[in-house]
Length: 465
Image: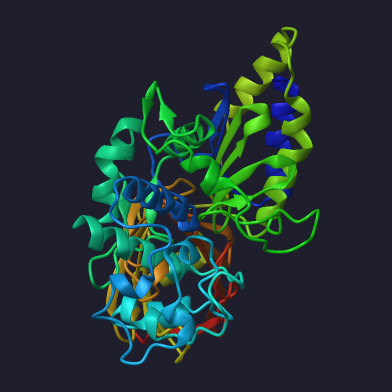
């Protein structure tokens, strides 16, 4: 594969997408290019979001091969205690196959309602099923949770524990974590955290029909069946989200398939080219990532060895080794900082529920303590122009008890920028504080988010001495 083309791919990803965290390109089982944008690193796990669904699919394939249930079993037969007293006709006909293909029969995705309930299985079975199962595609993360619940009920093990000796361990995947529901069931449709190399190993396993280093891990034929176009999900030739859907896998253009997750988590498999691409990112336009692959990677694949190009190879190696996501540049202190040091900033009532904050400058880092109206204080240590590791607690699930990296600088005499980055995920919170004669305004925003990216501005004043 052309080193110049791989270098162009990296350039395009950085130019067209705001933030890529890692990239690994594998052909014929050999790593051709790999890089991590610091502070992300090879040994750091990354949240997969919906890429988790494809690992759930693998668990279902293993359970099917073990005779624990069949793909055409009725869902209600496995959850009689959680079923409604009088299930409707469509719910009564829902099969395991329909959960796998996102054709459970719901008109719209019921996941928000399901995950807001105390019992997710019971809530899923209580949702209206407007269409005959198998006839209507609706992307449905709660349906994947039902697959996880089914595997746990059939095996007596959490999904993660069931996969560990059968799939994860043989692939060399260690330290994987998976979020759980209130009932202690792995979330299935999201919540798995592993490394970029782990994603690439999973992709290579898929490319090799479930065989890893001569050992069959997935049932023969399962990968072909799971990644085939089982159902239609649109008819747009240029749309990679309208090429058909398998068993928790997306079909792509160019006869490829993929597992993907929100904000640019990808495991892309190109069988004809014998290529696997693993990517983690924090991008709003996931299509831009795939377009970069089709533009640069496909033409770069050669049927015979490329002529040596040491200049291009050296440039690619240097570029991959120097990838970085640096915090904002600025000064560690300012005149405004000296006036605020250690003083409580009291904010007007706001939708974020933030009551006050205190900034204490230090030699190499600042300590910022934020007090919520309902959940008490939490402290963030932010390096001066460098990332400092810590943990953050917040009401929002997205940043609840997360390991973070934080930095803070004065970008102008009156402007203070605090950046808090998830160390294992895509969320980046930037809070820009501006000091005026009348007080302080703080404009917080997320780089990417499932909800608003621009949050309400806070207005505050230093408390009286």
